[in-house]
Amino acid sequence: MGGPEESQYWDGVYEKVRLEAVRESLGARCFHPVYNPGGKYSHKEAIFGSWIASVEAKSALVVGGGVDKIGIALATRGCQVTSLDLSPKAGELTRRLAVLKGVSQRVRCACGEWERADLGQTYDLIVFHDSLHHMRFEPALAQIDRHLAATGVLLALEPICPLPLVRLLHRRLPFHPFPFVATERELDFADLRRIEIVFGKVECRYFDFLTRESLSVLLFRLGLRQGLARLGAMDAWLIRHIRGLRGFASYVTLRATRA
Ligand SMILES: C[S@@+](CC[C@H](N)C(=O)[O-])C[C@H]1O[C@@H](n2cnc3c(N)ncnc32)[C@H](O)[C@@H]1O
Image (tube, helix red, strand yellow):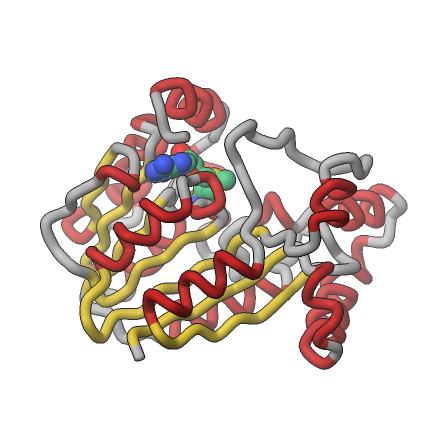
């Protein structure tokens, strides 16, 4: 994971990104419209956005930020941001976006593999958005431990697939909107426990059991886009109240602090 091949793969993805479209979507509450074919912000994105907004951070690090809308949003709030990504193209686009938004003084772009990075400082806030599951988990976790300030907060929104049978079926479901990258691995309960062991305190919310990406795309194609956001909220409510459904969730948001 994280070698030149993967870097080239992501460069290829970001070659196709139109910066103007990213800029236009910056004001929207959805950090990631691509996961939400209905065009509205999804329930999990809204929750994650409110978690990010609730952290009083002077310094923030976004890891695997891609074209880093989260980093730009944090810099717009006055935070000093480092945006790290494997892809030089992503870094270039983030830099240009920061200039367009007038926050280039507060955004530093670093290019490289997170598992080997040494950024020479610690951060009040470290954010992963759909990126941790592309990395080697243990080295990535050690790096978070090294770069998170004593009173810092780790926030992540990541795919999860806790049950082996669901994991097996998941990739075979039709209508999945994206090709899987060979090296990606959704998180599982053991990973969450490891995070808890390292940091001491972890809060998790689980999402998208009914509204998993493949099913959302199917519903969208059937013209049921209006119901998607409501279904996502209902879905999260069900998972929250029926513990057994967590095994079927396809996304998790987590907030970790040192106990
Ligand atoms: C699915 S994209 C998500 C991008 C962005 N966070 C978002 O939500 O739009 C995963 C990102 O992680 C980056 N990435 C993958 N492996 C990495 C690694 N080992 N170190 C740093 N970045 C990595 C990729 O270059 C890519 O930009």
